[in-house]
Length: 165
Image 1 (tube, rainbow, N blue to C red):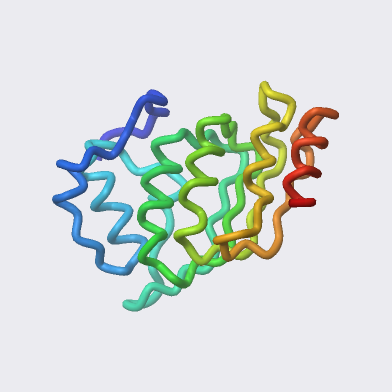
Image 2 (cartoon, rainbow, N blue to C red):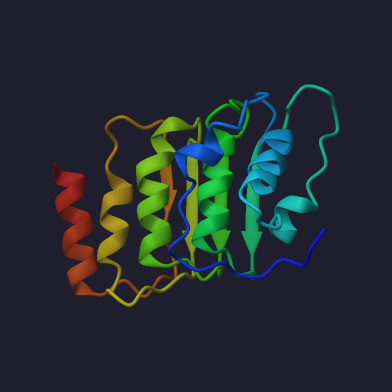
């Protein structure tokens, strides 16, 4: 297994490669398979996860003080689409970018995540990109934490507009 390193932001899971993927409804197996077919090394945090039972029973994924690139976010959320047990997802000081947040926004609604925490991930746009995440329609999210993200006035205004809608 090769050493993990952040991947370029232009990564996309191609239809041709994805055609090789047959979900097993187990996060560990599905994530490993997606990494394999996309020639990507698994993120160290996710590689350390071990399934304590045959049935997928993982409930929380927590990244803390480690860089999480958009490739990891893409493959992880793709794996979570078939895993109904994961209800908590946390990124603490994970170096998320606006692109990663866009991927989360587009894909989180296809998972069972109810609690989303994105702490201490300041963005270059002052936090405006967080506004899309607070939309509650078509998602299972019931709580979201955005503490320590240095959200400025523009970001707060964008978030409040989304909450009002």
